Image (cartoon, rainbow, N blue to C red; front, side, top):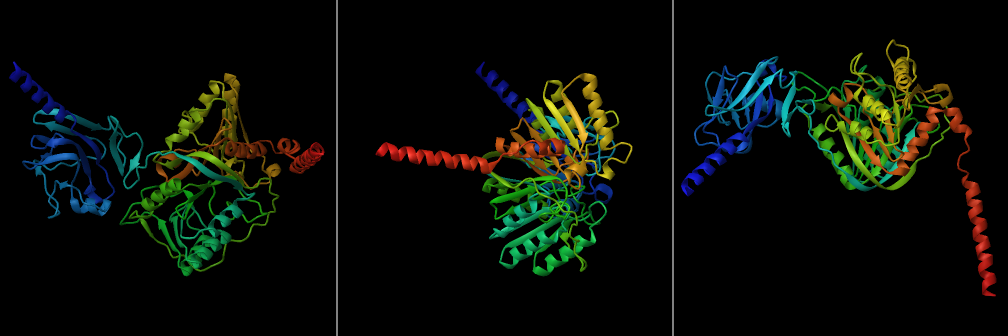
Amino acid sequence: MRRVLLLFLCVAVVAHAGAIMQIIEFCPDPYLSNDMDEYLVLAGNGSLDDITVSDNHGGFRFPPGRIIRGSLTIARSAVAYRESHGTSPDYEWLDYSPDVPNVINGDPLRMANAGDELVLYDKNTVLQKISWPEDVKPREGQVHYLENGTWDRRILMLGQSRFNSDVFHNVSVTTFVSPDCSNEVFRDAIDRATSTVMVNMYEFSSPSLGTSLITAKKRGVDVQVLTEGGPVGGISPAEKTLIWDMNRSGISVVSMVSSKTAHAPYRYDHAKYVVIDNRSLLITSENFKNSGIPPEGMSGNRGWGVLLEDPGLAGYFSDVFATDISSRSVVPYSGTAGEAEPAPFQKYSPRFSPARFEGATVIPVIAPDTSNLIADMINSAGTSIEIEQAYIKNETPYTLNPYLSSAINASRRGVHVRVLLDSYWYNVEGPNDNDEMAVLINRIAASEHIPLEARCIDLPLSHVEKIHNKGVVIDDRTVLVSSINWNSNSPEFNREAGVIIDQPGVARYFRDVFDDDWDPLGARARPGVDYIKIAMVVLVIAVLLVVYYRRQRR
């Protein structure tokens, strides 16, 4: 009986070992010609002697005696795979590389782009079957991956990073906004740099910010700049000029751009952050242009930003920067000599100064890796949501933007929601843009009798050029500062960067800015805090206490 039981247990263990072997990743439609770099990843533990991979037309098995411990990558051509990924696979199923072992082919496997299937066998037992477009949706360049039993929890394109969320505590935060005080915060942060500055910026043409980096380089700071190589409208003459000037100072400037030899992993490198001395992170919604970070006293966009001091958080973004700058699509950019970006001409009286807060909890938001955190943040709201966006685009004429949908659902459970959109001409003159979006939101609010309101900013009263912000405040406690636009492209296909900050003072700072933009006349009519009167009261109390103390001693 014991022998029978032992035999049963052995069979059960073997069956279980086979059952956990599975295909966890594959790419049937990569970018190279003829899809020579298509591949799959097999995960599990144990012998591969009876394992076969097939599409029921062709397939392969492994040489006798091979073992898997973890995962193996099997590519159609090791040479092509190396060209796309910079590393070699564990096996190839066509003999192109003498230094990579071959599997044993039947008819060679070739995954069709639009529709096909992969079947994993253990002898004659089907362990796994994946069909597309049934189980995953085909797309050129998309990597299909299995996570916690679910395929494609996010759209993952070839070459994209796979960062997980993280949490950093006791972070020091300096808040700032454009156009009021962003320039001074940036220049002060760069002026204090002693070793390294890493800049990732969609567009960079501001002469004053460029001068700060050049000055830092001259005093021995290692400065690296990564820009988008193909922004909407192309790289401007002013940006080419600034890059030329930075090149001449010895600053390394590179750009991410698709070419015949390398496909960029993101539609746009739209992030806007700076890592300083691996100790501080400056992150903002604004490009480094005169409109985004204007010189002091000059008008520009409404945008939000923070300077965060924490080595762990700075290290997280250093890793993001190092990953992106190492992409095969990143190449040196030399710029051209020319005219610098002209100075703004519209004066502006700042209303908000930088403010410092301690003890914040910060969660990085990296698109497309962890952009789902924005919906999670909105879904957590209990009392109020303030949303200030350059624009909001719905998925389809009948499907709301997912972030907006989350906010409206919050309003349905009693959360008070306000949505403020830009009203610059190109965001309101079309047939389906911000003014129509505000009407739609208010129509939903009226029909369902929920605490929801939307409006477009009154730019003449606000005296800002336009809203370029992508910010959210939740419950006067948590705030999102980011570069992520509310459309279908930005959170799923761009490289974007943001942070969720949990700190009531920080949230209140940006709530005050929001209130000022929401109702410029009302906010400015309300009396502000009279710090001079408060100081006088404190002084009088101090004098009275001194007098009282002296009388008591007599």
